[in-house]
Image (cartoon, rainbow, N blue to C red):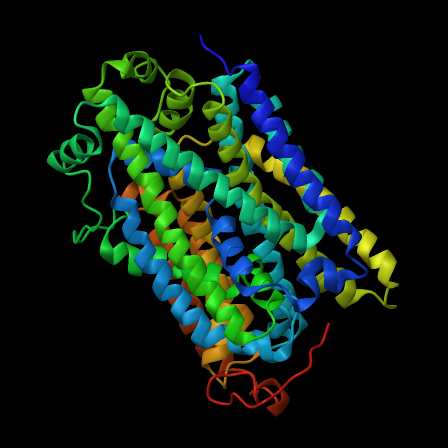
Length: 513
């Protein structure tokens, strides 16, 4: 079986050296955790915008997106509609509070609005959700690495995780943002080169590829079917996936931390919409690569070895990109695509483990420690926590390796389990004045309990609906249950409402750690 050439590994090694060097450069610029977590709140909005989409555009999106396009077509693209609506709502509803209060984590808001219990629960939910997600992000490039080398899956997982850990632990958010910019550029370049190579192999070029894909219905990006069996429809994009997207865009520490690294709320909004625009292009390009590879496999004699490899037992649509790299791309270009896979993985893993260390230090260590830590000691602890979460992410990837679904489906399913209760908790704070901490926590418990019960009883499989549809049901349960339960307890104090809800925006500033 063919393997990568020495030139390919040289390209991968050079890429790795560059991102580690950026981490070392950023490390020298840090004096305290404000620099480590938020880049001193002076990051350039356009760099943050690119980083926002690079964080979301993981190796799962690259490998799984190409696999989805290869197997099913452009239908995944309609989820970008849900992303756009989510970003719009997040910028209008949540972002003004986070920016005005000058928070470090999103969950500090919940303590101001409800109390320390709500903050602690939300931060813990975020940690659980993000750790599961990060495990899948590490798994993606590991699967690709096993397809093009003699490494087994466990060794590839460890190698992928350690690569991202080296620079993200040292360089903080500054290293994360600037390496994300480079990594997304590598991904886009690699995909564009692959599309050109595919088109050059087919008689008639890109026009023939497009016509073949259109004839098979693979270019249809929007489905108006009314079904609960999948979220890949227009209704699913707005409701099932939309709740997940809003939870990520409006309450997830990975996104909020980037908003807060901007100079002001206007810069943060520009960053958010720039990220969506670049993301739309990147997702469309990746899906089309999968569509093009499928057309190439039908039309080009050069695809013979690829087609035979895809027909082997155990292959899934997620195998399309690694096998295309292995059986078609020339030396050097193969290395570029492998580097792109690592880039996509690391641009998401670095953000995930960094945001988890931020939430742990700010929402748990700093919040409950009797005496404040010295700046240098706190910075060392922040780096240590980043390393710890990197190790935990590697362990989570070993767990994710047992999942039977495709990468994209596994990712959105796992994230969806947490999205409804977490978004509902923030919604109770921002949208209502009457809800108190007791009601909010009861509502969150009801929403989380509904998800846990449905998963334990295997209701999605029994009732033939996609697990992501649990997200809007859990959101509604959290909102209604929390508001009704709160009526049994005294209303919140004025200090927990003024300047902290949409009906009383105020000019409140300052923060509590």
